[in-house]
Image (cartoon, rainbow, N blue to C red):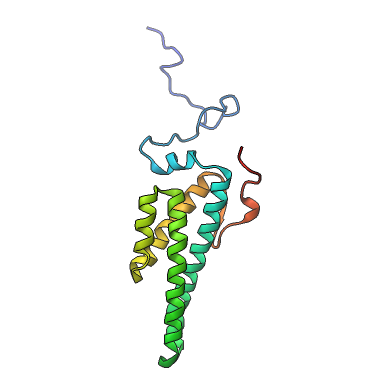
Length: 161
């Protein structure tokens, strides 16, 4: 019996000939992959909002770590002001997590994650988890994400119709 072209393994690079088949995805997402499902539904406005909220979360994380280091440099009497600042950052983090989580998750999960940020150490972990999810979504859309989030020049321009 003779071999046909379907019996032999394809020795071409997977990306080779991608111009011929623009419909073919390089790595097809799993149907159960929540990130791919959410990422496929996002508009340019949503991507800009995600990038903005993520930047707010990153600033909260950095200030939180700065406050942890600063507590060792401050005299005990001045630590109350640091505590007030950390509480304010915690509230800002809660708002940004709620706004971002409702964009990348369903609203119920956004509310739950927002409430969890009010718990001191758990809140930091939630900030990191939501930030990581936002980074993944932005990178899946070809947006470079650095230490301080996505640059505004990398975000898609214009409005969706």
